[in-house]
Length: 275
Image (cartoon, helix red, strand yellow):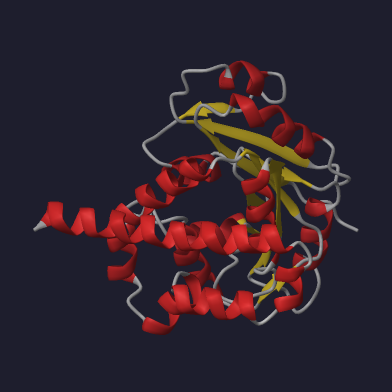
């Protein structure tokens, strides 16, 4: 089989705690023809030092990950581009399977790589359970792999969006053709997850959600991606999964409820400051 070059883009910001495992997972791919590009957002820790051990293709760019991703793709040489975050680890065959999917007729517009969470502590186990519900659910997952030409033709990630930019690109990609869903996974490292940290994260992104909702106002899309009722319907449609470890199931529902509350507060705070 032809082995076209694949460019893997990794945006970073103070990512020292996760980055080595991420970049090593790219190095460990069974697919042989990969260029690795790191785009850093002015890190204050040892992120750049770590990145230098894996690639010479390191750039500095901000202010947010959408701009970093687009900047990396503009400097990529691959026929295909894959975009991952610095706290993600690729299982060994991800790139090989993505290329196979993209090279198989009828050729898809892009490929979705399902995610699995892992980490330390009770809340990381809750997040792992939550993410297990999303595999293969339309409107929640988003493609991270496509041809460089397609990425550029679509304009890449919308740099005006801080929240929902991955869903926005997915919707535009779907309009160009079928999106494949591969079986290999990305492992998302939650670290030692603390509830307060994830609530602050949801609050931050919710403060920036208005721009996405203005661009994508369709009610059904909102319900599928972020609506509490749709998420709870998904969780309770598989009660056996919730009851395998009842305490973790209850913790996951508690965490998700608290995240929705933090998101509502963040959105309301942004609305008040704008009025």
